[in-house]
Length: 67
Image (cartoon, rainbow, N blue to C red; front, side, top):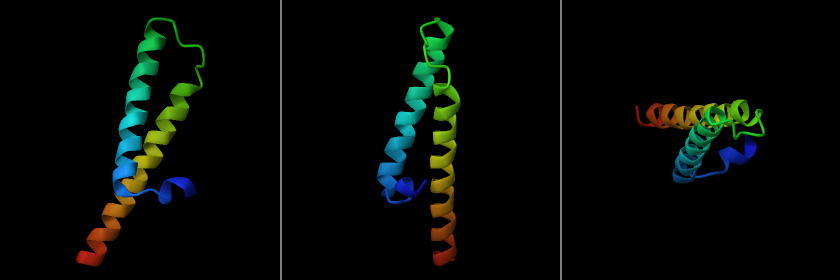
């Protein structure tokens, strides 16, 4: 999480987009029985949740300072 906090807003959005694509790809591989590492699904979901939380925190901070 510390590493994520160092990223800029654009980088966080880019990482979120990449994680969502990775999750979609993993789900497709799971459906076609090509997925080897089943632990990738929950790990990717957690990564997405952390990135969304970080974005929400930054939004709340900016609203607090502008409000």
